[in-house]
Image (cartoon, rainbow, N blue to C red; front, side):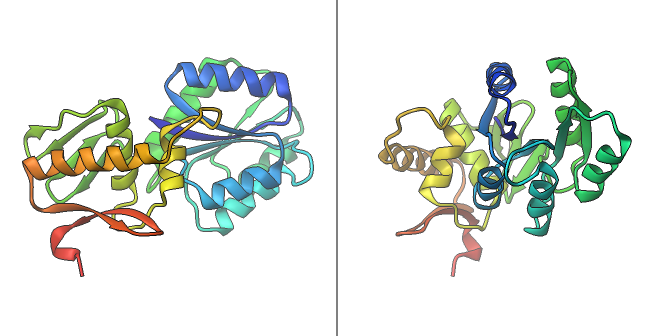
Length: 228
């Protein structure tokens, strides 16, 4: 499941994009103001970003610049209703990877996002690996050596988030946001249940990996020999 950061101030278009992207198995985190989008992007997990240049308050170009200045290299697609080529150049110069001029067809947006993801060097990858564990992102399949892990949708998404940032501590709140849409009522204890299930399933296939709990901070996936 790919998590998209969407910044679009037009409520009608924003709603349409949320519905259409969600129907295509994206998790969409949507914002109408640039400052809120930038704050989310710097502090939360996301795989791709769609940023409108004409945002109120903090302009879209400054959102893109802020994400890049924070060291984030996820693919960014900018949206603009402006025909002036100077605006497109400014957006790309700020750090965006591609642009789309309104109005556009949703299928073109999805195709552009897919192309950006495939080209991303350090962004969304098609294969993630740590020790004997491999995730095929396209097939949404996890294997330890040659053995396929039997995971539920949420267990897979949790493992994907942990493996994507292996060795790093990820808070419970970040993991919850990665699994669920913002408007769903969530119980934080569910993360503990999923982590417990993943630990058992990993232990059944390998002793080389561990999901560590750092109380008050979160979880991280590491190779056992790296545990200090």
